[in-house]
Image (cartoon, rainbow, N blue to C red; front, side):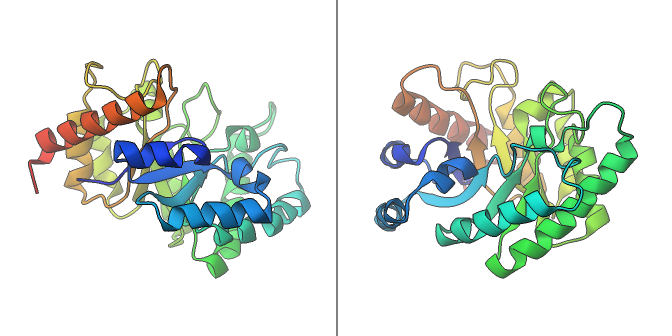
Length: 261
């Protein structure tokens, strides 16, 4: 079975462990709000937990990539953020950040693309001392106006050819944009992280969804995917109940896709 994760606040660590979820993913913002004492306390909790804490999302925001002409804001931000993320054990940084990378009206898309490539190159260098990887998350057009499909995200990864810049596919964005699961076979070796939610309601996956989660696992298994499948979803009811239903739904879909191993 592939590892399962859930995007939620760190305070829900015990609930994830109780539900049998492998990984907890939270936001960079939450981590940066912790005091030194809170960091020590949370690391102690992790030391006695079966849940792993290695990925975070909402990497950067609050200003525009294209207005930071000399990179001073971006550089200052990562000089502050990366050491703390390393301190708490982060390995994968999710680059969705739709507001930061949204192309302003009147800017040529090719110029924006070159700017993103430069950003990712700089980020790659900054992450090297910490052994971190950034995963590019394609977002549906409602969320951003650049890097909307897995094919676009893969182009950035392959053009850069940097081992610590990889691809993420979020099932809800992927399906919402009309992509087909057969596309995943093109991303062997570069797809290292995934998110999942119901593609219409954005709810936590459940057995009654009538969604092809079996096909999702079959496609991932075909390329030898080794990363986690992390729910980034809206929680509409009791969190523990949704966590348990998510685990069962994913386990059953995986078993139907690839059999017991």
